[in-house]
Image (cartoon, rainbow, N blue to C red; front, side, top):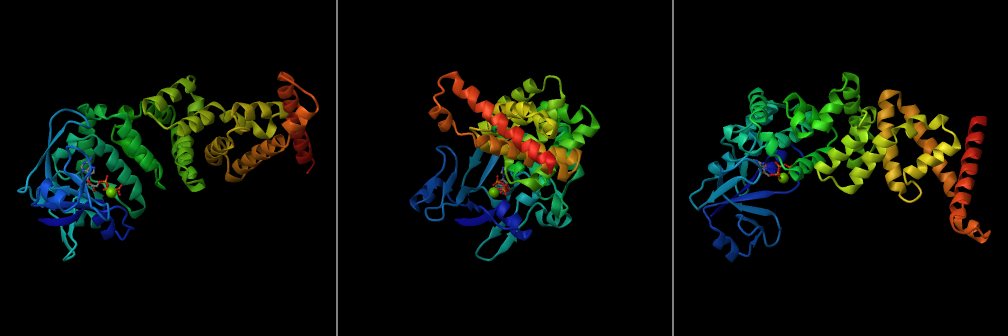
Length: 388
Ligand code: ATP
Ligand code: MG
């Protein structure tokens, strides 16, 4: 039995990047042997185990064969005779097909991964790349992640991706995997590159038709969406804000609410992402007009945005709008709008419902009174501000 460290951790180490999770491949052993040594099986029928102490992933060397279209259409073959080179060959990119013998520190590199690391190339290993459309998303994600290091996709790989899309392979992507890769990418500083790569290789239209419509309705709005996403990554680590910042311009489309709903539901996106994107698209006008709105209208916006009950969503909405206004106008104006909106909420929040109850109001009068006093507070704040 021989054990090698493989995949992302070897790649990242050679790039002098911090190494996160380590994966191992076990050659010349079978499941029984690993179980006897205390390894914990991960899935019922999958040759992957967790180390009894470190809980790192150990997989038996395997080969894969495509059976049907899509993510689940794989048969794998594992046997003590499967070699390390055969296991590495089923991987997606040359830079992800490196292995290390941790005892000798020797690197095993059968597919030119080190050279591609040096040349900063994302390149597929073999035509078998086309068998799994998730790889289109993965390569777009790596293009975004490694863009600051100067990485680009090899021409022949771009060609292959375009063929895959043309042959309908990308249609087989399941929503969960699309969102999984997209959400991971939103954590990257240069997340916009993910969408640009998909677009350049004709995959955006198939995978995110709603986004495609948004980004192509006119060139300026499309570019603005990418800039806004970039700006949002500077403002916050919050991936939901970054996602909403990208979608902001949907509000310029006639059936924006419907398109947004369709996109968010289709991808099974978590509720928080849905809410913030919905607020952003539906109430973008509140943010853009905030400096000139009446106290009455401002309160209507705050209520529509549920700001009194769910302030964290409101603050995220502000950030995604701020990213767009910063790109459209300037950073200072965007900050001003955001601060003004927050101050309005702060003064409105000072209204004490308890005091209103103590004054003897009952039923629907309570809400009417509360809102009247909120409007009074906002009006006072606006008046004081304009005097400054
Ligand atoms: P990350 O830093 O995002 O974890 P990674 O390369 O380690 O990147 P993982 O999803 O952790 O990605 O997968 C570990 C390894 O498994 C990859 O380096 C690659 O060799 C292989 N791999 C993962 N997914 C695929 C896939 N869909 N097709 C081919 N190989 C894959
Ligand atoms: Mg990994």
